Image (cartoon, rainbow, N blue to C red):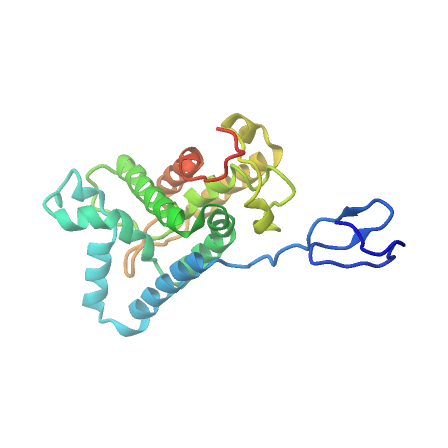
Length: 258
């Protein structure tokens, strides 16, 4: 960008940022707001909040129990005493992600969703994001299933799918100057290869933090109403690995590594 006047303007401004008249270069654009949340994220947050409102203050207990029973993911539906329940066996690997074990569980997940889902949506768009959400949700559920074959335990919560978004974000968020402070800029950065990712110090520090957080949270109860259940770390790990490894299949950015 050049100045139209013959002499240098000592204080020029533009939408892209201030210009240094002596170097003729444009400084990086002003940072995007930290939580400039895309509509796709707002939609998921709104649905989960609405469901929690209905569960907490509107629906009868019997209806709530039925909602969690048929909407939640139960390993026994695939190899156990509930294997005859065909419809929930097909739908619950997706619907369980919209149910939560109380407001604390919901708020924690929705904050994490806004932080790590935003750069992913900005990068791949809403349609790919919806498909990616389904894939990581299903992968997370069946990672939990493998660790609990035939068990009549209930899995609810978006943590697995959000872990998938976290794994995806690790592939590009820290490859340039964007980082978590500027999701719009981060969304344009080059995707790292698997080897580049695991050699990136910032990514490794974050993954270490994520693993420690899962260990710390593993002692909290976040099951369905009236049912205590530990944090499903298997679902988190399955979702994270699915997001980390499968993200290139959904990534439209061309100048990216494999």
